[in-house]
Image (cartoon, one colour):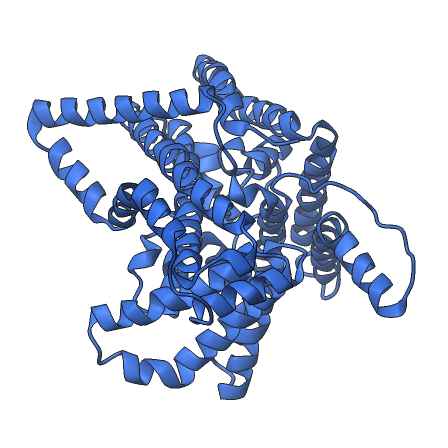
Length: 465
């Protein structure tokens, strides 16, 4: 089923927030845990058992790692058990059929597929719980002895489905001693509404353009249409995912939590390396802290540094999905990042911002074709068109530019820091500025609500990851 969590949120949130603030502080984590499990069960009721199992696995392993910390072997055993069980859950549900399908094709076998649906958010919460066990093993944090508190961390509904990935040590103190203030609550409402508008009004609107282009037979497309389509997808996925992250961060603020930022205007980047310091920052940080640095990072010579980059990016690609295009996407970025490190940045760094962005954005456009099209034949045809191997333009492009031109200009502008900077300046202009900001947010919320009630095109792209 399509998990229409935004619609559910409008029924779920008032009850959850009301109950949270009516309860004494000692009971608020328990309330958040229960309501988070209710929220999760709305999507796939049976898979709430997977969530509970993940909580129990890492809660128990964390306690044992700390209990036997002075022993030479036991902590490693419990850490390996945590990693193996988390990766086992992820592998079974997310990658089982992919491996069976490819083994069948390679060896002409007929092993039946598992045909299990993917538990929502499993890629996110397994990484969160695994990082907890690793940090307890490293001594970076103490094992959490209260299972309610730990369960709240794992299942917290604001960021449960599509991130950002929240590391336990970053919220450890907040889980037990957070301050819920009126200022933070309204800052959370503001951030939530902004994220809702980005997702519903912007991402959904431009997403329809890419869906139409993707559905066209490759032989009917022109070079201009191919570039227009992937530009629409780049904007859609940014406003979709950053919008969800804004909503999650805003909801966290309403309950007294401060989650780390997940996006920082990535299309302003002047290199691919900088892009990945701005895009899905919680995932980049996770792979850096729990894979790249443990492999040696850039401290063990040039050869191993390049190997580590390749390993991290192949696995980053595979994390996004059980299909060959995601592996190719990871390999693509590994090659580009290695080339940047070894060759390209020597020539690009002296150049101005315009030239460096002129290099970065087309590289990203090609990457999003690989990401968006699972059919490799379709992908190849689309990439050929983008390399100007086909007719340049036709009347259809002019039709779509007329239909979506103003929206595209709005999205280009909104993908920069300038609109939010203007909003902050207006808000700071005394009572009138505050009234204007409230009016802006109110209109954005009402328009988003109307869009949702209308039942229009409303996917969440990152739910399937």
